[in-house]
Image (tube, rainbow, N blue to C red; front, side):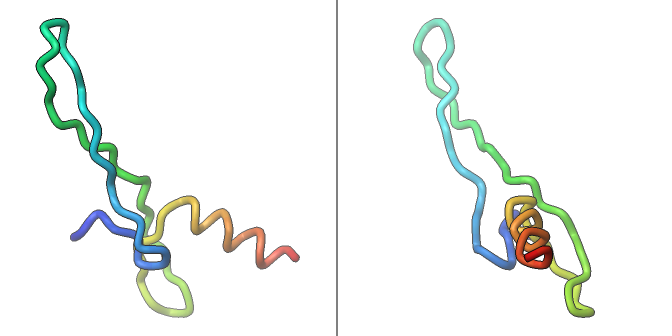
Length: 59
C-alpha cells in the first residue's frame, strides 16, 4: 500500500536529521492516512481531506 492520499495525491516528505557531528540522515515524515468508505468505495485519504469534506457537507 502506497503512502499516498487518493483524493489530493499528497505523499510523505523528506527531511534531514542532523547529529552532533553534523552527519545527516534522511528522515521521512509520513502523512496521516485513514481508510474510509466514500460513496461505497474504500479510499485512503489524509486527515486534511477528510476535514475539508466535513466542512463542505455542513455548508
